[in-house]
Length: 311
Image 1: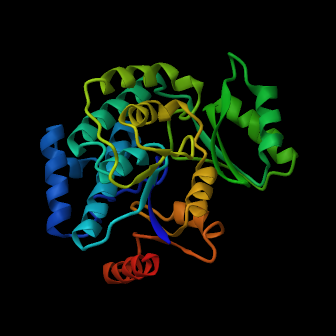
Image 2: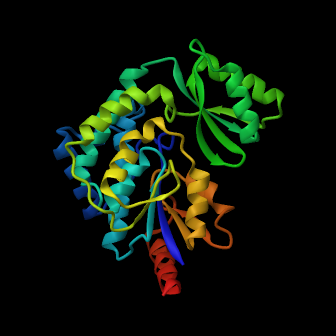
């Protein structure tokens, strides 16, 4: 049996998320390293006002995930698999030792800027609960047009799907989804239309920046949140990271792949607990837990227990 360390995506951010990280030497060093690379005070990025900016959100998610994962590594734990939802893939690649943290910081800063610049207002993402994929795809075909762009963005679970597009188009899909019996439609805390063709051009610009970055074969098994496949070739990994902003996230299939490969402990790195909630049903009789809200000694014991079972 194996462990998966999962890193959340945009929408999981919380005001004060960097200030609330464990006050340990390894976390402080991670914050200092990020500040030196970016040339700014990173603790200024997690205020409610700062988190209105896509760049700040994505940097906070990267830094929080890497800092807490490094803390667990220092305490003797190590993942068998890593995966990240959207921006979380960058932290996963860093912890798998495929991507240098400094390079990840610079790329993520550019990623956020490109996405925000492409769609400064009027666009976003919404979760559709209680509607199957086929029904939602029919609705998207009915609404999607040049004037009202809207696309499938995430398959988070069989009954939890996410759309991306203009606010006007998403409102039309939401109305039709409720009429078909959707349990809820919830706007997400994401101000850009991620994981669809609307971000093809920013993804191409990011891919160009990636050509100057060296990637290595991951030391931990890296699961793509887009293709739900294991990736080990550096060029394939580069393509996955650069283009994941414009590709549908299939997190449900990613978790299924992990379970099929023997993963029985899913650990969600900060911030939040959404991913562990999505994983619990699939991981029975295994476990899905979140770093946030857990004691470090409890996490240590659970991770050690899983390692001993796998031997």
